[in-house]
Length: 192
Image (cartoon, rainbow, N blue to C red; front, side, top):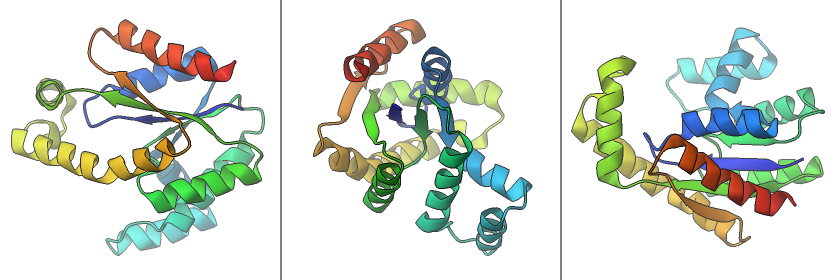
């Protein structure tokens, strides 16, 4: 089983590249947002707990999110691997994920970090805002605040995985195909 964390600031192309990587490598996409919505919709015990917490305007605790990831791993025993998107976001989440994967006799194979300049991100998001219907893609100061928050919060996760020599920075500018080829090259090096 080969597991990947795909990192990148808003507008870096994570969504586009995730879809291509999942198709190319037969990975299961694990988005914590999707997992939360699914557990809530199915009214599982974890979903009901998460909904109750969210209804109070609080963040869902790491234990609940890790529990949902554990359920997703167990529900997909034939998966060739998982692509983690939006998780982990803290050192505590990284440690909890590693502990969980270790219990399942697997680990993170590589952390791919898409590198895109702030100016390019701003332009991409403003362009996306013309058609996405997302209000947070139409205001440049909001976009810059999102990018700063991403950099402040996720740099610690990159630092955590760097100590295990698992972080690879990939240029996230160029054509979709060029970026995809660069990501695949890094994955292939580690899979063999």
